[in-house]
Amino acid sequence: MQKTHCSIAAMAEVVGLVVGLVALVPQLTAGVKMLRQIRNADDRFPVEIDRLACDLELLVTFVEALEATPGVTEPVFKRCCECCTQIAQGLDKVRGMVSLVTTGSKSKRVIRKITGLPGLRTAVEALQQNVTRAQMTMMMYVKSRSGRSTVRSQR
Image (cartoon, rainbow, N blue to C red):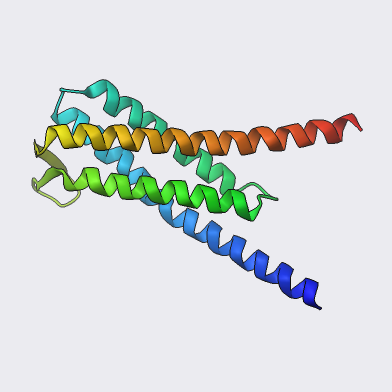
């Protein structure tokens, strides 16, 4: 009975982590859009912004694939949630450094002015490090899973 209770609790925790990770996907996707708006509004460091937007887009793809992967363990989801939460916080920080001015409808926003460029550059660099770290975590997981399936197929 004790074993069943523990496994149910562990499953519930994994489900909670999956739900948490799923909730972060729209924030990360909105972050990609925001970064592209910044790049279009200011050409002082487009390479860094472009790279970050592309890496963040790839991370979203990883997260969506991870959600659909059966057998993902709690520590993997927990680490991915931690990484994605840090990234979402970094995106909020970047969002706070730019002025969004509504033109016409609320769905069409244009960045009129970027405030605190040195701080923005630092925030973008920190965000890039967090995205890279999250991608590495997820790639290591995928690699470990593919190694296990190779071993199974050789048996």
